[in-house]
Length: 145
Image (cartoon, rainbow, N blue to C red; front, side, top):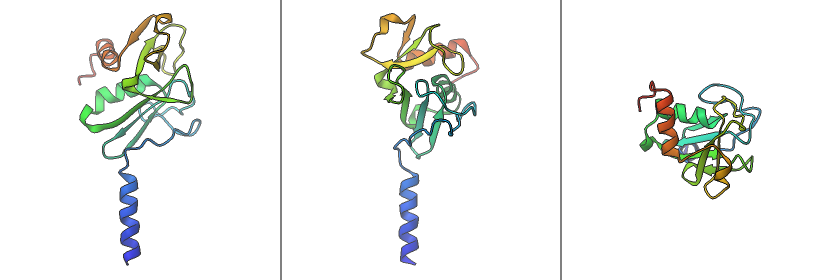
């Protein structure tokens, strides 16, 4: 009986972890639009304080989902793919968000994330995370948060 109690406690602790799980490209689906996540240059993910893993095929999906369904106080981790180093993730507070016609993102927003200290001047529009959320609110006022 003691074994089952320890197993249950162990499972409970693992399920409440705020550590992001790796995205399985070509297998995991976007939590917002349900497309299969394939682009290592555009993916994103959130982990709630309760340990819920939320994965996205594009930064714009994470923004929309965040604006519509989550308060900042609920989120433990927010990561975005580094466009200039596909396969690596950046915390949103260490990223700049660029919108440029030469970027082809999965959902068509021409949006990508780069490390804050990278070549920002080669892109048309550059935003911080909070500025990007405001930009998306202006484009779609239905996102009321």
